[in-house]
Amino acid sequence: MAERVLRVGESWADVPPAAWDGLIGEDSPFLEHEFLLTAEETGGAVRANGWEPRPLTLWEGDRLVGGA
Image (cartoon, rainbow, N blue to C red; front, side, top):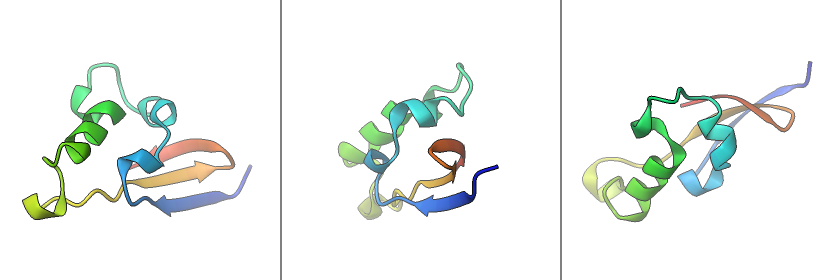
C-alpha cells in the first residue's frame, strides 16, 4: 500500500475535479467539484461571507481516497 498523504488546499481549484467527484454519490449536487468551485469563484463562499475554502484531501500515491 502506498503512503497516505493529507493535503490542505487553498482553493477548490487545487483539487482535480474527476478525482473529487469520484468520491461522492451521483445524487449529491452540492458536493460536486463544479458547485464548490463556482461558489468560491463567484464570491458566495469566501472569507468575507464566513466561509473559507480549505479542501482537505487524502491521497494514496496519485489516487484520491478521501476528502472533506
